[in-house]
Structures are given as C-alpha cells and as structure tokens.
Amino acid sequence: MDYDLVIRGGEVMDPGGGLTGRMDVGIRGGVIAAVDRSLPVTGARATLDATGQIVTPGLFDLHTHVYWGATYWGIEPDPIAVRTGVTTWLDAGTAGGYSFPGFRRYVVERSDTRVFALLNVSAIGLVAPTYELTNLDYCDLGLARRMVDANRDVILGIKARIDANTTRGVGLAPLRLARTLADQVELPMMVHIGKGPPALDEIFPLLRPGDILTHCCTGQDNRILEPDGHLKEFVRRAWDAGLVLDVGHGTGSFSYEVAERMLAAGMPPDVISTDAHQLSVQGPMFDLPTTLSKFLNLGMSLPEAIDRVTARPARAVRRPDLATLKPGAPADVAVFALEQGAYTFHDVFMTARPGTVRLVNTATVRAGTRMAPRPEPPLAPWAVLPEHQRAK
Ligand SMILES: [Zn+2]
Image (cartoon, rainbow, N blue to C red; front, side, top):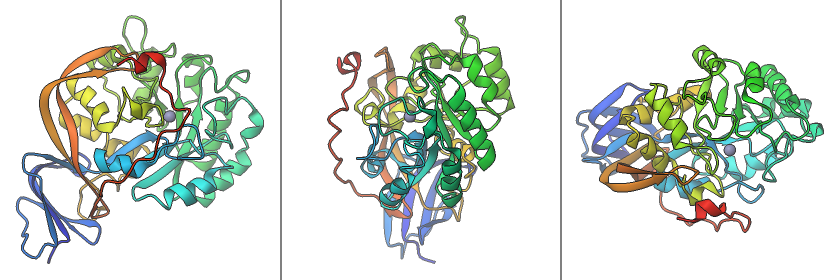
C-alpha cells in the first residue's frame, strides 16, 4: 500500500517503542504505518531523505507556557515547534479555572502542535509574573474540579508554584489545597521549587509517587542536593518511590553545578524540559534541542537524552501512546542533525561550559504533515532578560 510520506535512511531512535537503528518510517493517514529496514517508496506521495540524521518521535516538552497574549509568560508554540521538533507541549499551569476556557479555545484548538495543560490551582493562573497563590480565595477547588472534569482530554495534571513570592504570607496552604485537588481529580501534581520559604523539607511530605518536581536542577536555596553534593535523604526516598524529577530550565532554574553533580552520581533527571516562556526563549535556555545538547555535552548518551524528551514525559502524564514511532501512533516525527564543532553553553547564572556536539532540528512532522516555517510574534514589551543574562 502507498505511503503519504516516507522518511528514508535515518538513524531511528525511539526508546518508547523499542526501535533503534537505520530504518525508514512510513506514514499514512496521519499515523505511523510502518518502521522497517527498507520500505517501498514507489507510489509514496512524498519522501524525506534523513540519511546521516537522527529520526525520533516528535519531542514532548513537559514544561512550557503557551498562552500567548493573555498571560505574562505565554509564547506561541507553532513557530518554535517548526524549528525544534517539539510536537507536544504541556503547558505548566499558565491557565487557571477562570482562564482555561480561553486557553482551550484560542490555544489548544488553534495550534497545529498538540497542546496539553496542567491546571493551575490558582484560578487566575499566570496572568502576572507571580503572587498567584498569595490570595487563597483564588484557590477555588470546586471550580478547578469542574474545569478538570469538563476537560480531561486536555488537562493532564495540577500545577502549583511553591516559592517565596508565589506563596508570600500563606506558607504551605496553597500546596495543601493543590494536594487535595490532585487527589480528588486523581491526576499528577507538578510542583515548582526555587527560592524558599517554604523550605524543601516542608514541601516534600506533600508530594506523592507519580507527582512531578520541576526545576530539579535549581541553584537557588531549595536545592535537592546537600552542600557536599549528595542527594538530600528525603528527596532520595521520594524519588525511589516514584517522584518524577523534571528539569524545567527557564531563566532561573538550571545550574550546571547541580546538574553535573547529579550526573556524576549516576542520578540524571527523569525528564528534560525547557520551561519555555517569553524570557527563557531569549537564552541562555533558547529551546529544547539546546537544552538537550547541554546534557549531551555533560556526558549523557543520545538514547538516554531522547528517552527524557519522548517516552518519559509521555509516561509522566499517563499518555504512553504518544511520543513513539510504534505503528498506529500519531505520525509526529522529528529529524535532527548531530553537528560537531566548538560550542559554548551557559546555565542561568551564565556559567559557561564548552561543548563539541549540538542537536539541530532539520524537519518536524506533525500528524503526518511536515510543518512549514511561520512568523514568530514579537516578544512582549515586558519580556526583558535580567541584566546578567543580557551580558552575552
Ligand atoms: Zn514554568
């Protein structure tokens, strides 16, 4: 039978589907039809030569902010997807109960990329940069429950940002409410950490196996490592029990010192994500391939890195059917060149590390169709990087 598109001759790397090696990927009707050593291309409507390149499932970014125009952090996913291979974007709590209907109509339904959401426990979500939890009246659990129940196809979890500013004056109360909500709707909770209070050892008793701790490589005072570099004991216990450690690079949450110690101890983060937003896309985060390249240059293998942006994030939000090239799966595919050269990467403190490889996205296929470049909207007038990150 004829294919709509055959991606030919690339090195397929699909940890979720257990596929690896030089293979062709055949697509028909928007789904993966076959992955094999050599597929017939006569009669195929289109072919894409991926010789010498890496073919992966479309990437799954577990931490993004894509509610453009209505919130402080929001960007548009499609223009970035085209040049990064990210076909599934999990919006991490940009919308709350009051703003989710608009998010669904204007972002989820209008984007070519697949967009999921974590619902913010604060009904106002991230309209402003911070303080969304300081007025507990906004943690309306009844409203949040109704919103989840009406949108379970899009809402895959609950989000709570727990740091000094977001919780100012109310301590752990919003985290307790988020815990209650997540238990009631039986979905994972993603908790953001950074600068306390609350302190990390106060936050952890409220986390459960299957929850996601984002900003796990933070260099702020709520680090998951002891000063001597060992993992804090209560973090180790929670991680062993099934807590998911997610990177969420952003503009404030990726420290080379912490990441290097985690890798040196054989404890790489479970998921690599960007926290892509109005500021972080200006650098030093930039995008998911750049963030992945940082881990490759720290010694993580390419299959381990790809696992952390495909199968693992999909599993974390209970969608193992996505981000795989298994026949029958949606035909979301990314093609990358692994370029060799002399590169310099930076963490959020502008600490530099040299690198010899970088991943460069060369084609992005969503639901069987190759995405075409499109204009990126201008950044918001308030989206100004901190002084030290502007320096380079
Ligand atoms: Zn975020």
